[in-house]
Structures are given as C-alpha cells and as structure tokens.
Length: 350
Image (cartoon, rainbow, N blue to C red; front, side, top):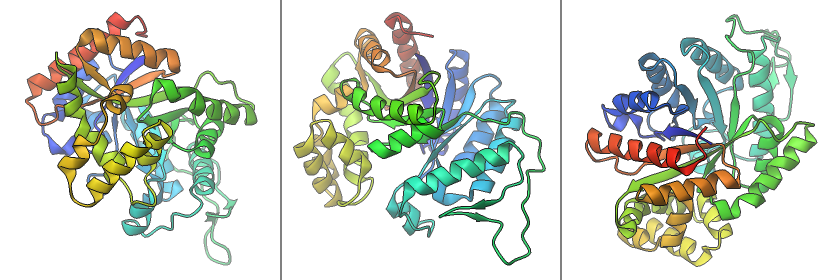
C-alpha cells in the first residue's frame, strides 16, 4: 500500500501548503491530490503543484464532470501531464445535484450514463482520435452545423493518463471497475470494504479486465494525539460537514455511506442538527466508532494497526487528509512524518 496526501478543496487556504507538498515528496509519498467544489478550481492548484515539485504525482480528486466539457477535460489532462512530466492522475466525479444544477447549471439526471460517455470522449481525445460521438448526453459535432470531427492538436506525453472515478453506490462502483483505473473513496471502512470491492470486481469482469492493477484510493482523516478521544474530536467536524452538510436531506452520498455502515440513527441526527444550523450539536452527534473506522487517530502504533487493516481490506493507496489544518506548518509536517513512520512500521509500505 502506498501513501499520498490529499489537500481536498483547501489548498489555497494556506500559503504554506506548497511546503507541505514538498515535504510529502521528500518523504517519498506517491501523490498529492487536490479537488474542487465551488471555490478554488483544482486545475490551477495542480499546475502550481506541478511547478513546485519534481517527482511526486499530482492528481485531481476530483475534477467535476458538470464543470467542463469532456473535450476540455481531455485537453486539460494532456496539458497537465506534459507540464508535470507524466505525473498527472485524472480523477473525475459527478459532484451532487446542488452543485451541478445550482452552480454549473447542468442537469444532474442520469449521472452514470453521462460519466460513461464523458470518460469515453476524454480517452478518445488523449488518443488523438477524431472525435465523433452520437450519445444520449454528448453529440460531437453538433448536427446540421459547421462543426467537423476534430482531434487534439497537442501531442500528449501519454495516450492513457491514469483515470479514477469517485463513486459510492453499487452501480457507480461497477462503472468504476469497468472504465477506470482506480476508485476514489471517502469514508472507507475496512469492515465494509467487501461490498464495494465486489461491485468493482463485477465491473472489471464485465469489461474483461483483471482486478489488478486497479488502484483503490481511500482518503482518510489523520489526527495524532496520545489521547484517542481527543484525536477523534479533531475529526468530528470534518465528518459532520460531509455526513450532515454535503447535500440536502433528500440526497447526501456521505450520509448514505454512514447509514450503510450501520450508523443510521447517528447519520439522521448529524444531518438534522447540521442543516438546522446547530453545527456544534452535529459535531457531538458523530459517534467515536464512525470516526475510528474511517480515520487514522491516536498515536503511531494505533495508526500502524489501522493501516494494516486498510491494506488487508484492499486499499492500495491511502490518501492522508491532515486534520490539524489551522496549526503551524511545523505541527502539520510532524503529523505527516508520524503517519509515514506508522506506515513503515505497519509492514504494508510499498
């Protein structure tokens, strides 16, 4: 199992995140990831990371499918891969209906079909094919107009950039196995992994592809503290935001993950408190077990044991999300170094 570092959507909130990424590279981590919602875009951040590192991979976790045409994403992937010297990993996700329709003005319906066509076009672009598609979601070129099938002018460094999909439900997981090279997972729990990996394996089988190589990338919050309860408190706000606030009462993927994991009552309580404006109450409603199963908390030895569980369950890349984001750079580097020592101690380091 490899280690990586996930900045999420927060890279630009601190000017010293560049130094943290450089430390991750020095420590031998496999990749730095950046994402987007409706703040900073991930492409600008990844361009910056490419310019300020030399060896570590840079990955999008995620680029939003409704934010860009598939042709533009193909152009972006080719450009970032060239700029980074072949270090780019393309992670895609549909986002949710609130962002897709409220921010980008793109209908959210049938996200799986849209993602399938989207990935197909991106891959055609990277192979420098003339793109002509007549799908349910995308038609290129438009009929009865001046458009003609075009191919990418740029010559990509690689014709296949590693492609990842963010997925939660069974059908989305099968699609990831079928058309992607990896899965971007949030709130991954080792004791719930068999369910998800069976769907990925079914997708691989349907496409006639072996299960290996397939990169299971699980983003995990990291909080180092000698007192495990204090460490859990550092993560509760993050969990409450996703389980309670990322979406509506009718549609919240992370709330659904918590319910599938056996935390139905807590998931409803977290969401109700969060959406009613009681964020401290939402934080308090997050059970210790939910944090513990999906995070790295406590001291080095405890983290090493949890890393072994993640690796044994099928995780091939662990993406660290540091929870001491408001602390000084030295403390955050110390947390990162502790995680690396735990990884080396765990016996699963690759």
